[in-house]
Image (cartoon, rainbow, N blue to C red; front, side, top):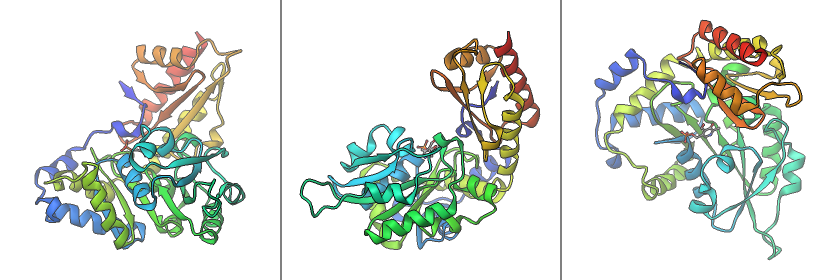
Length: 345
Ligand SMILES: Cc1ncc(COP(=O)(O)O)c(C=O)c1O
């Protein structure tokens, strides 16, 4: 199988498994796991924040940050297709009791003017007070695109003027860094809190971090316990995150080249709409033109599966393909050929 459903499907490499087997561990609820502590120090430095916290998933990282930033009844601003609103199982409502003021972006990117227009003030009793602006970089549903740093700066200026906090869903932040050539801090400097997933393109089997001020992280530790996310000898997986940061960051460029190649190869397939220029990192979104294509997205997914290529239909006429560390260039070429064949027969 060539699995292009997500970059979460990667399996730990032999080198990663070796360090996991040999990890020196302790009870992380007592703060005694050396690998977790080291990972938290390394990622706090990488993200330019005072402290970081290791958590089981990107979802928990986002939800803990939002919980710390808000009170029930607050409003938060984010783009309509952002992950915490779309794909975290209603956690914003269930765990933080906040409501979301959704903005329509262009490929996930919103502007400072849109944010300014969406802010509501708690001094009018009818309004929920706006507390937080959440952005996502790279933007998953936007097509893995890199958030322009200038846009982030402008949004943060508006947020500061109105006393709002800024949160970054940085699940794939290092993909943005590798694609743009900028350090993580070029982005994170504008945010009070940010996340980073170790189990996506970086290839660790599990785990994410959140980062912020020491006080912010201290409060997040309490909620991590409440949400059931405190782990014991977690160093056995945290060390895989350290290994991933050491070995698998620069190679993200390969995934980006593979995604671009895939987009170019399928761009002339019958009934398929795709702009390879828009592929900036490891995610490829394709649209099927219902007037021309012989299959819709679930049909294409099934036909590809029969030819041993896995992908995800996002809705009736769009599909997402993701390149990662367990897919070679030859497999990407093979998958592209299969998509072209399936659509032309
Ligand atoms: C942008 C973004 N944020 C957060 C997450 C959540 O990560 P997890 O699956 O580890 O909960 C994902 C997962 O795909 C994601 O794409």
